[in-house]
Amino acid sequence: MANRVFNFNAGPSTLPLDVLKIVQEELLDYRGTGMSIMETSHRAPEFDEVNNQAMLLVKELMGLGDNYHVMFVGGGASTQFAHIPLNFLPKDKTAAYIDTGTWSTKAIKEAQNLGNVHLAGSSKDDGYTFVPKGAEISYPNDVAYLHLTSNNTIKGTQYLDFPDTGNVPLICDMSSDILSHQVDFNKFAMIYAGAQKNLGPSGATLVVLRDDMLEKINDGLPTMFDYRTHAEKKSLFNTPPSFTIYMVKLVLEWIKNQGGLKAIEEVNRKKKDAIYNLINEHPEFFRGPVREDSRSWMNVALRLPSEELEKKLIAEAKDAGFIGLKGHRSVGGVRVSLYNAMTLEGAEKVAEFMDNFRKNN
Ligand SMILES: *Cc1c(COP(=O)(O)O)cnc(C)c1O
Image 1 (cartoon, rainbow, N blue to C red):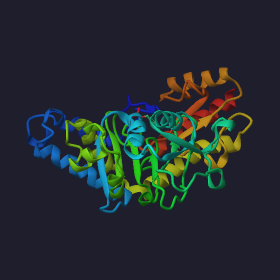
Image 2: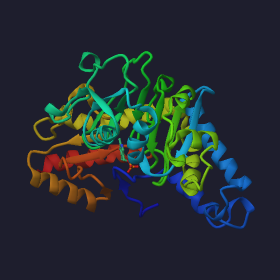
Image 3: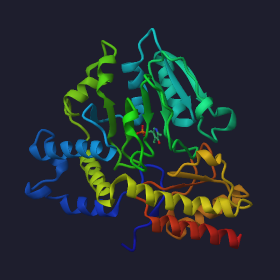
């Protein structure tokens, strides 16, 4: 595959080559049906099997019990920012949110439009350079839920472990680090993630919801906004994003074939170490704006001695076949996104390239 670049885009992002090859192979004639899965009815047995397999694999890889529902819905993770308070924030209650920048800030804004919000923790005053933990998090014990963002795609911070919330339902936006390392997923009342970073192409959002949450849903919601609709109909109340679900299923199978989350975590650890070693060994050239205990494994944020050097590195990297290293327009700098589908080879090669850039500049 001589013409494939190393793609460090933050999302949509690189996909496993093995998965793309299966898609290519099956595109015109899905398993003898004489048509693409894209052209297949979402009520057909072929799609039903894909959908069921995808749901089962999510549960299997996450180690979830039967008390969880798995759904694939449209609208992106951003729509969930509103659906969560619509469903789970009653008028007479307050929801707790942790503000770790950009995406969590947007989730908070949607909740504030719909009800009462308590800020349970924030790193805003420090430029979102860490994730609040332990005593940095506080909220009344009768809140409707606590919401946090596990990986902050733009700021480059991440929760690798999560607060114990007791009876308070814990809701997490895992859009940019879902299934990238081992987590006790059973401690969450709800997990959601846009597919386009770690799960597949854009178009579907994975929602994992614990059974008891269905009983807490506010009355009077439009059918499509009510999680019960999608839980009960296995995402088939209306036409789901079927092609994306098909690709998500293939990515989940790929994760399983790699050895599941334990094996994925091992590779991801080596990948992020390759990049963070640049900061650890040459802090005069590669500055890590993020506090060490909050460093993201998925999106490594770096600053160089000047913006000119950052531009130069990004341009030279592109010519060398490493694309997507530009930091988000809101923060600048360099960002190396290391989602599951990025190979260890890709991470090591880009680290070598960056180190050579340092020597030459
Ligand atoms: C990308 C991203 C989103 C937005 O996802 P959409 O599917 O585009 O709405 C939300 N949260 C996090 C953490 C993200 O990385």
